[in-house]
Length: 80
Image (cartoon, rainbow, N blue to C red; front, side):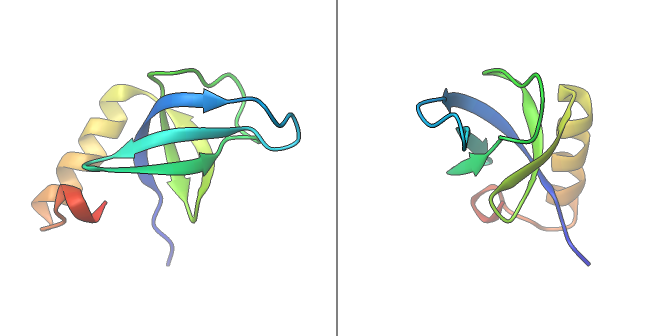
């Protein structure tokens, strides 16, 4: 089973048109995530990411609901 985690886009790097990347915040962690295949994402949007790749864009309410559920299961912000 795979788990996609919601994260908030902090910045977008379009310097390589073949591989658009974003700095994404997951709890306390910030990671570089490929957003090449997700359309219409902007700074401040939330995405679902798995293994360094954005799978889809989600709204803020869904992202917060999922993060709250993970926290209830004992996942700490630093582990997201």
